[in-house]
Image 1 (spheres, rainbow, N blue to C red):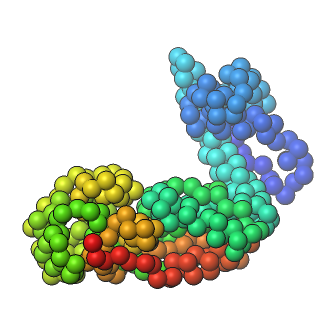
Image 2 (image 1 turned 60 degrees about the vertical axis):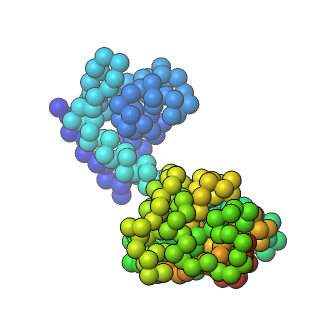
Length: 322
């Protein structure tokens, strides 16, 4: 079996001797999926085009890269060796190209943030952001609180509890502390006719909505009120916080949420927060590539971070009494 020896990058002749980059790319995708058909779909070409590229690459290298097993592909030892090299170098090229495009201030800033925060806090403020930073083109993508900075994303906005999770050559900026509290519709009869702030113990008799993405929300709030979470009456559970808030709005129970997400609902009195909000250990953070490292930081990163910090630290309107 022929062994694939990495060329000497210092020699111009060795670069000229490289196989076709299109063939290497087709091989890389086919190796990843172990399927010429799936590679063709990913590359938006025909199955025959991928097969020809791989066959030409094998002829150029003088070695077999795949064993054809039925309708699938299985890498040979030489194929495994080449796949490791193409995956490393092609992904590196993709990162460099993406970073070069982001170094242009006109390039979109791709910001990842939780879907509930995107829908309830960010989208209502896009007009204000455009007025404050007219040269920034922002692309928003939904994620969950566990998702970090990845290729193609310029910043990640998420709730985290110290110590923060981040990779090497990344910076995390704290934008604000998290404040959580129970919310409910003002027209429910659960609180009776009183306009006084009800005692926290009142919640022990009410249907409490909860979410799998934040299972500790109710126990954390109870511990700060001196209540035992063992006495809580859990009602419907939801996969995401946004669904929980929609259920709260239609009166299915009492929800618990960070105050950032219900500012407009409290202002319009679609919801009330009779017990107010309490700080937790969590913070809303923005993770960015570290300045001066190999991955470029978007030119508008600091301006966006400053705007977010100002907006998030503006005291929200809180409606307490029914």
